[in-house]
Image 1 (tube, rainbow over the protein chains, first blue to last red):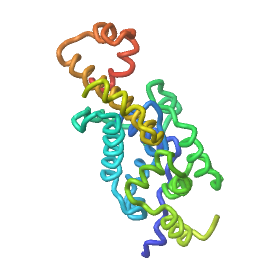
Image 2 (image 1 turned 30 degrees about the horizontal axis):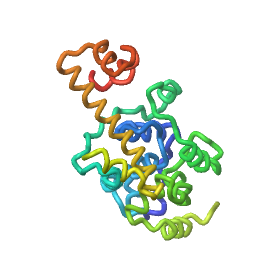
Image 3 (image 1 turned 90 degrees about the vertical axis):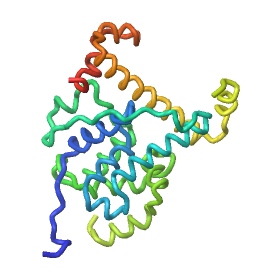
Image 4 (image 1 turned 60 degrees about the vertical axis):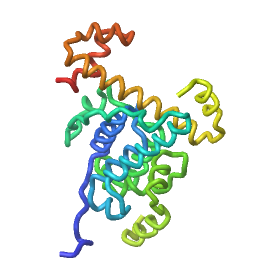
Length: 170
Length: 70
């Protein structure tokens, strides 16, 4: 079996949102942003390969971006607090879990990413990690995901070219 | 850190850094709060006491944090 014939795992956009909202909560964010969506995609080993970075590297990069920004205010590197523990989210998302009051809502940009990702699909409840990655790669700084990819040294136009070569359709 | 220095640095002219710093401060404050709510619970504080300290109702701290400390 070649790698091309592997069927990509279908994810529910809500499941991606729920996991991303836990990434947001972990850091103390009020909103679930494009950067958090990107972190969730990195849980997929094939996305790690495509981007050439790991989830841990991405989380560390976000922490150091924060340290740099705080240092610009004159707050030293000792100014920090550990991240919050992540809670388990249901694999099969329910409307109740999605509507939970303490969950950080999606930012408008993150919402647009998920909408773009499901657009070509007949079933809007199924999406692949790559389909979500595609609109994220088109974002420009100061969008948080674009800033993160920049900090990680990912060449987004190069990755896009490679992904387009693999999937000639749409 | 002295206040004079902070106010000088706040006028740093790169909005990308400044806006990020503002969010980073918020994230930091949230994590400080969460960690200290957890430690207050361990020390036997009631949700009412924690709510009083934070200036919010007992219910709102409970809704926000009960799932972590259980």
